[in-house]
Amino acid sequence: MTVRVRFAPSPTGMFHVGGARSALQNWIFAKQQGGVFVLRIEDTDAARNRPEWTEGILSALDWIGITRGSYEGPYFQSSYAGEHRAAAQRLYEGGRAYYCDCTREDVQARTGPQQRGYDGFCRDRGLPPGEGRALRFRTPDEGETVVVDLVRGEPTFENKLIEDFVIARGDGSPVFLLANVVDDMSMGITHVIRAEEHLPNTPKQQLLWDALGVKPPIWAHVPVVVNEKRQKLSKRRDKVALEAYRDEGYLADAMRNYLMLLGWAPSGDREIVPWSVIEEEFRLDEVNPSPAFFDEKKLRAFNGDYIRALPVEDFVGACRPWLTGTGTIAPPPWQPDEFDPAAFAAVAPLAQTRIAVLSEIVPNVDFLFLADPLIDEAAWAKAMKEGAADLLDAAIVAFEALESWDAESLKATLEAVGAERGLKLGKAQAPVRVAVTGRTVGLPLFESLEVLGRDRTLTRLRAARVRLV
Ligand code: GLU
Image (cartoon, rainbow, N blue to C red; front, top):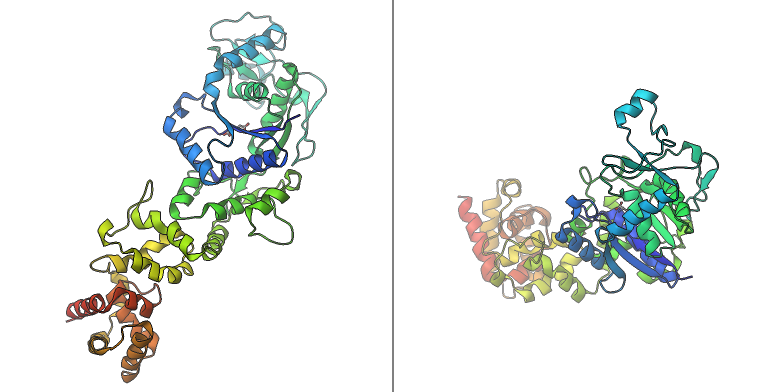
């Protein structure tokens, strides 16, 4: 039997990190089993039918390594409406489903507001189909439904506690629960690996598989992803969009490594491991069923480690979208012709050790490419205290006289200028740094001045001095 798994996102306008995690788990499982990964877009909700949302899913998958053309699909659930209806009809004709004309109010009037679920009123009324009549599945009165779940063992559900649930609405349209089963069935899915939030629906779905006469798949309900307050990650409250992380400058390799640590770890106390190790070692039955904490701080630190591990030329290449502004990434504050690749290459190794996400490259290097630095006024106020004007005057004179414009000479010079005024180097650097870069923190100052060059450095120091008059 060929293993066939599927990833079945509903388009929502962004790609949830929890979805990315499930997609990767499916992907690896299929690969390990020599199986097939199917992508199905569950777009039956008309409002979720925007082509750009589907495109967003495809490109987000692509980014984390589930590349176009290397899987089956995408299929679109909306194209299989005929099959969904046919299955509903088959269940009706086989006596496994019945029509019901109860309104919610009718049911509540009979059962009282406390009781949840349907009371089975129409079970034996033999109503024919008709406008406004929902089709309900006749759940067995006895027995249990045992879900074989690679992550959770064998969750068992008593059938008598499962209500006769609706499988097609009053207008005849099949509900998602049924469509999802019918598609899995016709696509030959053998293993359903998906988020825990679908577990409550699983016994109902398994009953549908049984009723339609097909052996149900093996399930794996992977843990829900939560924030630091142990709340399920939500798009209203938390940063959940994979695209947001991508555009902020998380590396795909860091991201997918981190996502795979949600509820699982590779052997030997390691966290940062090559993808090939994850592909080899990952086991669904080792996934911890408890909610998995999506720790953004840890991910950030992780990403910093990944950035530092890049060969410098790869780092330079990886920064390019933020240096030029491509696609969904905002353009930098300088004009394209102001950018100087050689100057960037010169400071890149210094920046590489200091940033945790690639977008942070921009504020670190903008002083090199802008005609005038972007002055952070708070930084200015902090650095340009008493004595700053005098220090800048002395620095200007000393820098003008420098024979060799290199980091070492610049440092020795400013150190001497500071010492004459009883200032340690750190204190002497502050006004110079703000005058030249606009900020109090940034790349090592003297290397920055070396790359910026004598003329531009002096112009900025003089401009700052004028402002201090
Ligand atoms: N379309 C569902 C979702 O995005 C997935 C259902 C499933 O995986 O069975 O939550």
